[in-house]
Length: 315
Image (tube, rainbow, N blue to C red):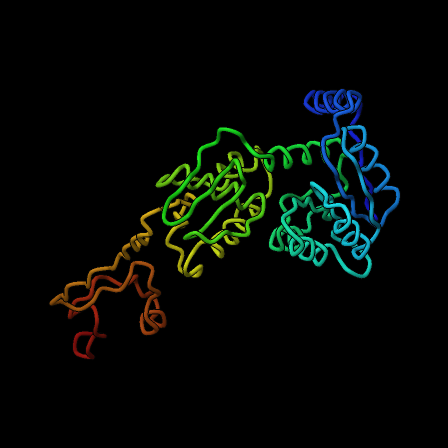
């Protein structure tokens, strides 16, 4: 990895200082917040990230390549994986796919700044979040805390159901007609949000704020997750009936499954025929005959006298 994480100045945002202080207090009190697997082939980056996560109260494992990461995950199932996309040999996309095959686990992907294609690929294979490089280790810790906070069972949350779909936030379990759905963390949150707000249209910015908890970010994240969720809950993902696109707005969950009415196409009525000869447009160039007559005047509206040259007798 060429780009290194960077740390903001000590006087950075208060939310960073508060989160770090709270996490450090938890670590001092002996309450470990969970097990994190950091997968990165750059030892400097891995050391910095692992150090911040350890001070935030997490147990941290490190792997420098894909096969080692899969072996560590099989030996001690992590609560979350921080996964670099650019790994030697087996890249991060393949590692993410194989981790998903072993069972559900949240994944935060580390991607190159501005490389939208890599971010979309990471989300397509099931990454729950991504951080672009160079990044702040403190910001990464906040992302880890945010993802884990969402994946923890929520006691007292009501079970949601509509259109043959169910979502149980307490158990983090979703079904379609009684069959359990294999959803990622964000896919589950997105489905639960739609089930809780049927019939309402939401923009991608709204969904990013309500489901991801972000006030800004790459909106393609929402697009990719909607597409993946459609692939798991729709009978025909190419013609979605539950998660419908609202043109110019975003998306709406319709538990009735009624298709969105087609937008009517406006047609121009035919022009009524006229009795007289057609009139040339105002900006139409003069005819070749008029342009070659010396002292010719600009053309006038068509008339019998004006449209014919004078006869020898008249001249």
